[in-house]
Image (tube, rainbow over all chains, first blue to last red; front, side):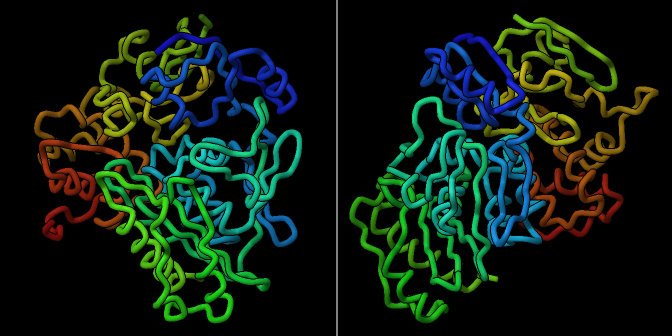
Length: 262
Length: 161
């Protein structure tokens, strides 16, 4: 890969300043960025590591929500969120493999917004708030299509606030080579209603399945959505599955998530 | 270039590394610790797994400069002080947990990370934990046996694949 200048600030303010320079990019756990740099899909002149910023680490319950520092690795979330928000912790524990989970971070996953990544389903499925150095962004406004988000150039996610669900679960149909979701569904039940977020299926990235949300808000059981099918328009077509196959998986995985929710 | 210091296998080390120097290159090319293998170089195969501050990490997918000050354990650090094979290494030999041996350093280091967290894993837990370590020779049966034996459990009673 092309060489670059490496800097590792210890505060968000220093990181924002370092990212103001031309051709500078943030580096979180690097589990996506480093392979893409090796493939020369990406060649920053300066890489600003966010891994030395203490204020961006940790899992902290706060008034009905779980606030997770953006630079917290998946393995830490899987372990430390388990007693507060088991559905979210279980999702974090299914990302990649153990070594990837020790480096990859929440903020990195959300900033990248891979259409098959797991965390976008949790953020959208819980109606999380994405907190950056500049503002707070509702998950419903944050995800804007495949690899596209509301983040501005140089803006850093510092933490994410997840409202804790009464019941939740993530059901992931694993693509076994990449370990991404061929289709994954996060279901979360709140007093205000049920949210259903689907990853891995749509060419537009993570989305909410409104019909299932409406049916499950009336009756939170797998039977309530037994007759529903998700439209296959604009779903991903690749060698692993057709749009129709993915649309079918959305229904199956949603029912599994509802059945598993606790 | 910047000076990157680590504690590798209990020894304080220092070397000048470029920004792009991967932990795997730092270990192999700058320190001469060639026990860490680079298989796919795309973070799929796990041959390059080492322990960073006690956690399994794919050394081909981390920059050395980002790990300045870290404690790293490689397969060279797994032997006993007298040079004989450590418990995990001996179990891999005893249960024929390798054929070509290329993936073995990563398998041994992932096993070390697993057993540090979970000293008596079930067979299912072993298979689950080793998902990120690919072996193209063995079919994994003997690797799982070796891990069970290394944890002091019965290695003979594995379920058939």
